[in-house]
Image 1 (cartoon, rainbow, N blue to C red):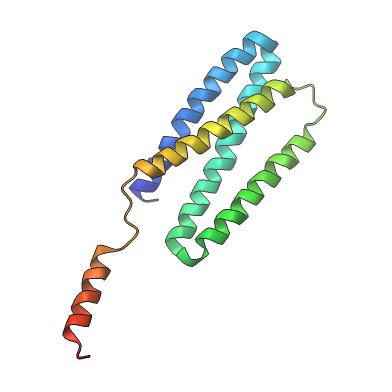
Image 2 (image 1 turned 120 degrees about the vertical axis):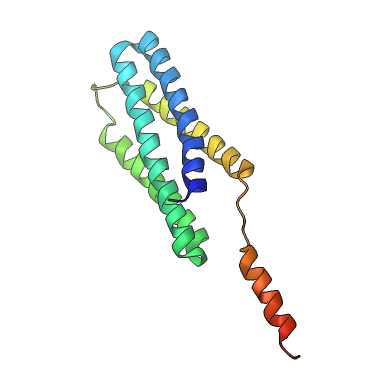
Length: 145
């Protein structure tokens, strides 16, 4: 993983963890231990799903840039399906508070997306290789036309 990739991941993880900590505290006060557990599970689910997605997307961009857009669309579909399967599997659970879980899942996901967007906007990532552009100029300047 390149340094800018790790930085983007860190810029998304830290605010999401902070949001999760606030959600755990609020859920513990409002719904007790079951609420706190629901908030923890919601936060962990967002970190795992969104974090794995970002890592897969970064590896795809590095190894197969022509597949980047298609992979992004496929990845978001798989993430939504994975969360939907999790929600269906634990629909009637009493192990944790489902409302605390749902609100934490929603809040942490929105914070992740906002933080990831901000990280991408602030990152100074080159989308053109400077060396290849200079070598192309040298090649075209030296070739007879």
